[in-house]
Image (cartoon, helix red, strand yellow):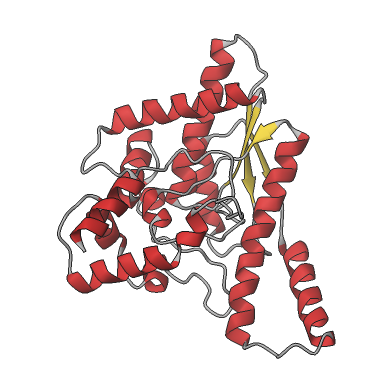
Length: 279
């Protein structure tokens, strides 16, 4: 178990402790370099109101401001995208996050019609094909993934229209647990928060000046309609503190450690490149 744990920690690249100012500087530089190398001029990121998108969004805005200053231009832009499904229950939190990020541009795309249309058409089509009916829970869970993928579709269309890259908010505490939708929020062009665990992302957000109720907000994916605002830690079966301690190489409860490793093993397919016969 210890050898496997060490291998996972090495893969996730989380440090036992961080210099917050250094991490902010290095990640802003990373974002600038990635955008410069691409030859594009925009960054497009969905903002939910949670700490991950808030921290990533602020880093992106600062990178854009520096690029414009470096080039004595106004050519570079960060586009923050609100992506509600109908009316978001915690919309006030999203607006607080936007005020903190202070994006150069902000747009809202309501994904409800797109997600509902795809989901309804799929259910109709599989019924017409006489496939076995699935459970209501399974349908709701998979509709949640449709919502996540629809949000990424919207971000990539905006990026295509305005010559942009799409950053992702994935950090190592989510990565280790596969707590993202494949080809949804797991799809991106760069991942500025990777190598940080959840408490370290919170530390960056606090240092950057986020309001306490943003960087301390209880995380929720809010994808399922039968279980709205379901807390991440309930869905995961372990706490972020336990995941963070694991990633920092600390001793944790053995049952929690076993759960983390089991979840890591079951979600390897989400992190690996698409397999081919040449692999």
